[in-house]
Amino acid sequence: MAKLAGPMEIYPLLPGTNCKICGEANCMAFAAKMAEHTVKLTDCTPLYEEEKYAKNRAKLEELLRPPVREVVIGTGEKTVAIGGKLVLYRHDLRYTNPTAFFIDIADNLDAEAFEKRVKAIEDWTYVYIGQGLRLDGVALRCVSKDPQTFANAAKKLIGLTDWPIMLCSLDAKLLSAAATAIADKRPLLYAATVDTWSELGKIAAKHDLPIVAYAPNNLSDLASLATTLQAMGVHDIVLDPGTLSRSALGTTVDNFNQLRRAATIADNEQVGYPLLCTPISVWADYKEGDAPELTKWDEVLTAAAMIVRYADIIVLHSLDMWTNLPLTFLRSNLYTDPVKPVSVQPGLIKFGDAGPDSPVMYTTNFALTYFTVESDIKQGNVDAWLLVIDTEGMSVQSAVAGRKLTAEKVAEAIQEYGLGEKVNHRIIISPGMAARISGETEEASGWTVKVGPRDSSGIPKYLQKELWKEE
Image 1 (tube, one colour):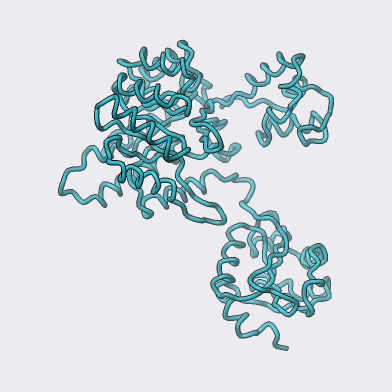
Image 2 (cartoon, one colour; image 1 turned 45 degrees about the vertical axis):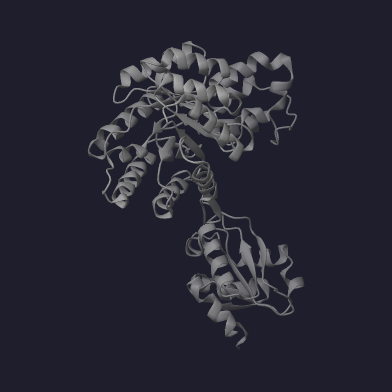
């Protein structure tokens, strides 16, 4: 595995002033966080503001360069960063910069259809464990084969959206026309090949644009293309080794594996770039009369396989909820920290018109637990208080077993969030899974503990029947 810098390598290159501007207690603490990649080098502002640190900054930037370089597409608040990977296996550290989903749009659509598809791409969303799952960008395809039409469509697109854009054509003249028209929006150029690298490399270098090197099923040519583009002054490169037909999906997977292993295990800088996959290519075999659902299914299967095989950016055609929802679920789960459970902030949450006589429940701050309970309370349309206790992101059953949810913690949370000042009664409803600590909780807090349903779906009925008030 490519060696990751440790705190003792980073610390001597920091200012050493312990100024705390970064938010850490001292430079050593900052170095430790840098080694874990939980803070950014730019947080040390003296490194960038004072010229005397310029050499050390350059050394640190090289020392901390990830095996897979990071590439930023677009400008402003909606930029998307891809790559920046540090490890091959997620459990070695964690994955950064989730796979970006770009949806295609043809340049020859009429104005109404063009605008409608852009809006559909932007509006696609789903709330999952408190997260808004979304798509990431628009891939403008040159279907017209006309440079002016392609350029005009690119201009029209930036008038409709500020999302990152990918310009797609294997014809250098077509791609150059559109790239020049919207260069200030920093689109990703797709793609430079063994035949077009010279012209497109000059365009990318001139405007500082990210570009895709494309050599289908030829890793040697791909590495050569990347090296040549870099020598031309192109800084941001993405690799596309080709997405073969579904029957040859194993070859595609193998190519992606080889590239990512070479970058992270062998520290091969030639291929240390983000990887692009095009499941949209399955539509090339679609014929009139075929069932589109089957082609969409092929697209989903290809995309899912490549998300778990290191694809940093994926180009899709389908906008259906049933096709993209499992892909965004998969991405969300894959790009969480395996060491740190997804959690929410602890505190006291008010639902509806909860007042002094309303029921009080408690739960843990594990995100899936919290949002499930929240949803069930809201669906029941009940007025209630919910005390969210810090269990380090563990579910109720796990937190009780692991002593992260104890009677003492419940009592402390009641005091910390002033629950006694919010309600007139002294009754708190325990999750059914935490029934075993109810007696201890009564002793520690002085509150009466009522054991609620084991499953949160029973909360509305339990509250509506006011079972918590029964002696």
